[in-house]
Length: 399
View (spheres, rainbow, N blue to C red):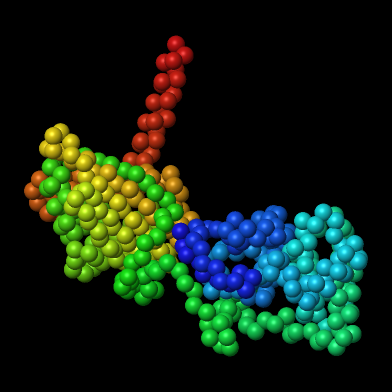
């Protein structure tokens, strides 16, 4: 989850949302502003149109995280707006609405035309409203309503605004949000490493978008395993693809994890905060990292707990792995693939850890960069085994 700070209808809002949450879902589900309607959800019908930094934008294809620091105005925020008030009266007078589903987005787009057009040119109005679809009215009343408002305002010597008040090129909301004057509004998000790869000084808690539970058993006493978890350099040497970039401390570690899956390669560099509770033999590691090549970022949290087995001669290690992935690599981070990958990584980590604690030479323990083919082949073998197992079980039952 990502914390998004922005202005909605002149009110400061700071809420968490998944990176893939659209602005339309954000204002409807998080803020209960259901005047923004969802139609096609492909940016075609215009029912979801809102003002993003004063410019009409399709909220169904705009990510909420991309609007951090911006000013959003939904139809509810135009209740006291002079132009919208005139348009509402004109829509009623010209019978410009029927079922009303398209009307909120239609009013937002019509308001922009009233502000921009120098005169009530029917052709330009129809072109300007062509991105807002109505399946009831036939548009005649809508066009007449917009024309009447433009004519009335120009008759009152209210001049059009050049480009509707737009002051810069680029997509709606691209760098136009300001506190006052030319002072930019900073976007407040969950801290991630800086773009130059520097590790963040402070690592904040977060709510993972995905949580996976894993466990494994080690033939060593819990006290010995817990002491091993205190050896950060030793633990790092057992983790596939992990390398340290700075000397670790008991509370902090900086490093990198490299992953390669076929043609996809990523190296996440960042830092993690380490917490331990000797009384319960448990701990937590919270980290952030970025891959400069793909411009992807991740936040991760690993919680572990050690439980005695076989009268204390062995240890059950219970893991809870939570993460949030943003950027290009999020497109391939499917839950099924991630679960299979996590299972494989935990198995390799457990094997390396056992060998390390058993005194195996360090050359046999150090983990190389992850092999995409070996991971994929193991996943395919496991899935084929499950598939044929179901087939043969079904045949056996039929006989």
